[in-house]
Image (cartoon, rainbow over all chains, first blue to last red; front, side):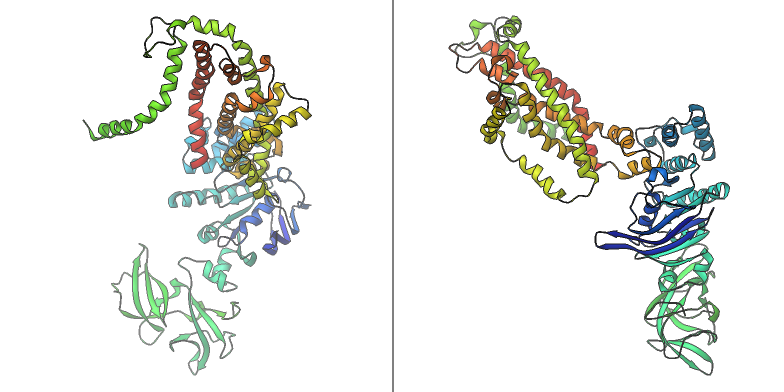
Length: 356
Length: 276
């Protein structure tokens, strides 16, 4: 096990720059998730750690060893691929044991290790089968097993769950997390699914267009998104945004939306009067208000999810989403008042997108 | 009659003219090969004959030096197939896996060579072989067959290689394999169907090739089967048609049987290449 240090890493494909100077310090035993929309460079970065892509500039170290020029086979890492990449012509047993065979371990040691991994992953009855005879979840486990027997310094996961159906994905998510808690191997996990990132990570790295937007614990990112991108990306359903201008009167500061809707903000906010801002409120912070509190909204669509109800409503010409646990019978077209407590409001500068 | 049966009957009816065109020469070939000599030219021609003369084959074998030509053909076809495949694998692998400048150009060049008939080049090739002192050597055929088939084999193998996920090799590198180990233990075993299919095509191309063999091989001892059979017809005072036909049966039928047996690979290989 070891730490991973990524400093000033750039990636160029010809004249196209994919990664713009990435700096991430991954501590020993940490589970770090790289998350971002497709094309943000997260998989490329992972493949650079793995040694499958060259490093155009900057340095990557595992432990104290700089690995820029070390071939993949000598980096002492294990990787789980999106499509599992199981060797189709080998049995599960041989798939898991391939790396050990290449390292010329004794037959006894190999089979001991494979059996141990198979036990952890519930694969013992399937060792003689070929990958083609396994279900998606079982294939996924074989891919994990292949990584397990290696005792590698670092585990790399490249969207390992995206080929599974929704239910299995949740199960495997928990299994991977449990496995990490047990083995404590430093892990780097790539996904575009922010829920996977939130649930699994010790720390999340949010990436966009080849840059790191924010690094932090899941709750950090959720409660204090550094900019509009992170605020929008983390959380489901995602944060509501309303553009406006900061103003104040004797009741305190507020944001005026285009149509004059008044959105109250905290007195402690450092936003300047007249500043163009984006007002952000998470759906679960928007509550149905009574009296003068909050602002007007017109219900457009109602979507019950079971535990709560998603109310999509029009506020100042923009569609926003509010989560309600009350089973009141609202109807589309109905006028309601929504309120977001001032302490839960996020403010971002409209031009830079940075948190205020 | 079920609609399905009606449909099949209709299709067969539509196909039947084509079947006749394809099957008639084979029919005549078999019937003539098995006929006694004095029943060759009866008028009007008949499909029937008085006895099955299996001896025709044995006589033909000795008289036409069939065995020698068969060995020549086998040597030329097998060697050129093996060399073509062995050289095409690295080329196809490079085309499929590496980025290099001129790749598109090279692919187009390969395709363009297929548009040229070997007959157009036969004179030039002859001069080349004279220069290389290879005329009248079976190896001249091996060299040219390899060259002519390689464009096709590279193209075929490459399109199949493209369907083998890159991640399999990457996974093996991470597992600790060198490039070569990964190729031998992971990549090539998965490419067997493609290699078999391509080998079949190359073998059959070489087996049937006539013009180059006729031009480059001068001595009767080195004739391949198509030329040997041709020599039983061309420029003779009297053509022993029953021997000629017996020889064609022996030259085509075994290959056809092997081919149809390997067809399962052909279909699997092609389907895999297309759909996977």
